[in-house]
Length: 305
Image 1 (cartoon, rainbow, N blue to C red):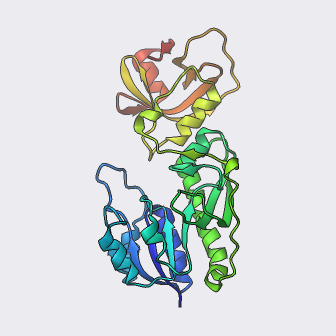
Image 2 (cartoon, rainbow, N blue to C red):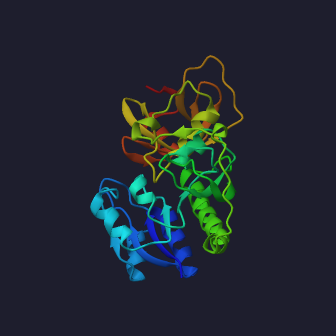
Image 3 (cartoon, rainbow, N blue to C red):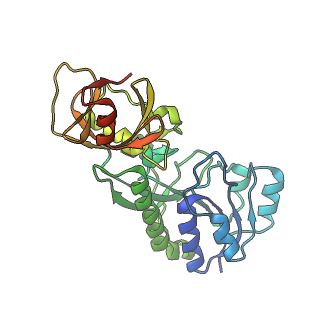
């Protein structure tokens, strides 16, 4: 029986750990994160799944400390698996497993290496993404590819909807390749790093809308940061506004400044070019309908700050 140490968090971690257990892998230890009370914890708990199966769990702030490295080395694992674990594993850890260290990344590598790949793919208007299992190296997301599974990104999909697809893609990719990986016959295809780029993390302020952009670009931002992420933000009537859901319309405008208005019971936003229908929005922290906005503020056009 193959022995593994698993570094995992989030839904991808939960589902991929489930795959390892289903295939009879001896998971000697799970390394995960403490939930951050400042973060919206909307995803499944890897620690709870490990506890259910009697697997020891540790939650170090830094997995690369000598104490943690020695603890893991003492387990003599054949494999490392990293499934949405947020810390980089350094050389002293990566040399421990005698049959390799593998990471599951939420894009079709070499595209969208780095942080929050699902959100970046939507922002850039991609129509496809997926999950990639690859060899881990000290440099993030650049090791040889072992398996990939693609999923579509539809024009109105939110980040949550795409992430749910990517979670299934990760499960499928791992489930399909794991027998070959355990048997030592899985492929290792070098990445052509020139075909993709590295992206960093995103902050809440990165969701501020630039209304000079075209309607499609703004729509992509809205759906990329829609709840449970912080949401796309702007200012209207001197108050903070969150745009939670939009649809691209066929309307065109000329020489009009970006503005918000209600017409025939529906809300709209004039963009740098094109018009969005604003399906859901919050004003000053309160979600309201287009009709409620019109009842309070009328149907004239209000420019965004």
